[in-house]
Image (cartoon, rainbow, N blue to C red; front, side):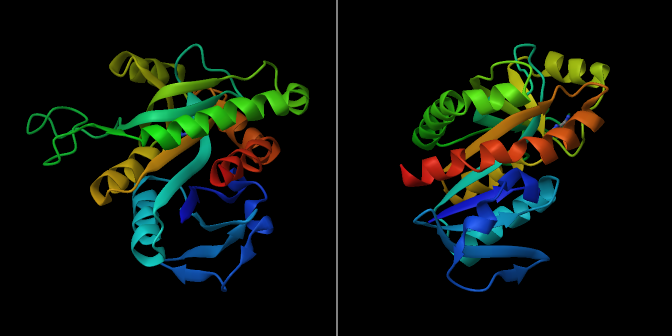
Length: 243
Ligand code: ADE
């Protein structure tokens, strides 16, 4: 069974409204876990709230309390790489905690005693997610063109995670210099990826670019969250579940 995890409700669009519940929501650790059938597929929907601790706790509960066998993370991100435009989709191939630094005890970004900094996503599930995201961008081209100032595309690569909302050109540039292959920045993915790695659960991460992590990000993010995020969330996750 799939768990669909997002930080915020708007990042899941109307998925919760479409879920046919098989039981009342279970509230654990101040989160509501909704188990049911979504477009014919069994799944559990939950919102973690923002940040790495919230996301790791929620992923652990999804796996241990609800028996999910696969996790799909759906949310927004700030674009870092110059090629990334608002409305583009990033499917993570790996995730890293950009704010983790136990140097000189361990190399920068490495999770101490786990011997790794980058946590890969599941190759097959991510390929499926990227294929469905591409198809969605084609199918929804007219709708998206009315809302975006560019024609969006799908990118696959490294996602950087930290407990920090990035909204300055200097900080975004410093992150890019430190992690030149990072496509975008967000606040939960690498925490979920670490949990999934440790618990051997296949993970795919979908991030839609809501802002470019520059000075206007504090306004661009909520505008995209409330205006556009649902267009993607309503379609892409269920296409993957049905596949
Ligand atoms: N999620 C969406 N935009 C972001 C940003 N600029 N920084 C961190 N997380 C984000």
